[in-house]
Image 1 (tube, rainbow, N blue to C red):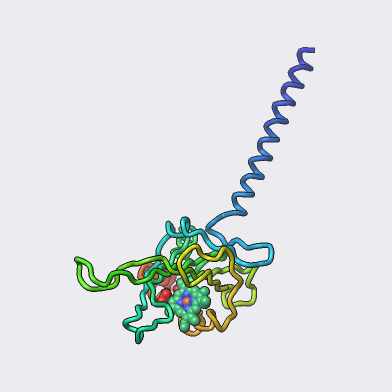
Image 2 (image 1 turned 180 degrees about the vertical axis):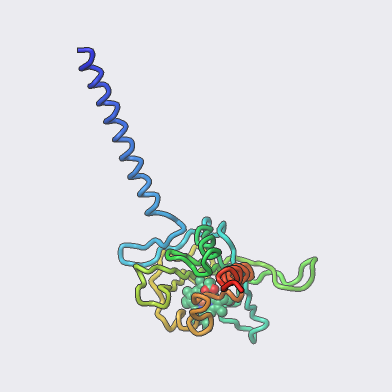
Length: 210
Ligand code: HEC
């Protein structure tokens, strides 16, 4: 009888543990589904906007600026272009010199603010002013060059659009194809010193020994 009781107690404990493990596994799955460093889509296939509070803490690749006063007063994008990538994708890039599947490149636009500081004349960061995103996703974009797709979440102050459809090739991809090209995985590595250096290191390592 004692033995029987302890079997039952044991069974209950084991059952409870199994239940807890199943719950934890489900929670883990939920978490990976909502991984904010990977592309997230709506049911109708639009990209959900990456969260500025999250991507602003990623690795910042560079900050090109195309100010109005160097573009006849009307630059197409007169802002600083702050480009960010998640640390896991950056780690992969440093290993291989190409962006891994699932990479999200967030380019947030920031208006030129002051043009004179105590350090001298120049261009100093003003207000946030738009969000462009490039996503490499082989499942979603099997047909595009290196599986990239391009999205715009407004060219204006936040809050940004919560979701966006992929842009037609002529709006974005064609310029990236022509000017960044396959050698740089259709991204403007040439303007991001840390990416340029990382890629040069990968190339040097893979060069045949003399
Ligand atoms: C006329 C050429 C041109 C067009 C069109 C264009 N881009 Fe770009 N894009 C660039 C250049 C040049 C850079 C790097 C320098 C900079 O940011 O100013 C860049 C950088 C980016 C980056 C940062 C990652 C990278 O590839 O270097 C993203 C993201 C991006 N563009 C998204 C878009 C989206 C979305 C569109 C369409 C709505 C678009 N681009 C249209 C030229 C273009």
